[in-house]
Length: 363
Image (cartoon, rainbow, N blue to C red):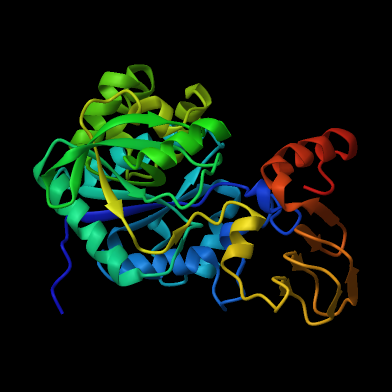
């Protein structure tokens, strides 16, 4: 086996609450810690194992909300405790990337790193490994911010889109022309027809020096907060300093904050069986279905004259469905969700309504 490159790192981002998977995903136990597809492993465990194939285990970091530190430790018992990086609050991906990039750069100024979500599904791990290694090698030698792009199969309004130049600058690496965050349906259809747009998988690759330069240029106020305290990183005083820094950070995604502004952004068109597992419909796409197209999880679910439904219920509960078509039915001990599949993007809004009227009890 080829020895792993000691300058390659990964930061797995695992701090979200997965509200579009409500009511199965809850604030105290969100989707990255759940076995969404009944595989015997949680999404976080699959993601971690995927990266151990080509990243030294001591170079794998999990960045998560402070309330999930113990959960991460339980699910990944081999991970050194110091590699679980706790965020004091949820401020989207820009502060998260700034924090871990400064931390890794201080430890290893020659670091090249991947920043990836904890809750994606990858059906072809071999292709994923070769794509990531290609990206890391390119990032190691170039001042480049790379993202992995997925060939779109439908005009989805839930993804960001990347338009790229037709001429490659290196093996399967292309310069990015434009980023468009979650377009409307008409625009998404136009992108699909044109053929030079990819879905943004939200998996980023760069060397630590390049990403810190990008922060200094495009998000200088945020960057200065970390630069001023960089000597405290990787020491016992880190937690108090990060608590203070995060309270001053704006809530901003890395896409808006840097990737849409920088001119050294590149994409690798990829094909490794990717799904972001962002919604119940994406889970439905990846689950086994009966002859009427129903994806059913639950030992006592009975389906009569129902088609193309996504159904999840506790094993010890009898659930009988009749006459439903293209619906999401999620039953938990305290919440029942019945929702049209076409409205799945609104589940986040429905959860906000529940919170407004019922407080945090069902969150």
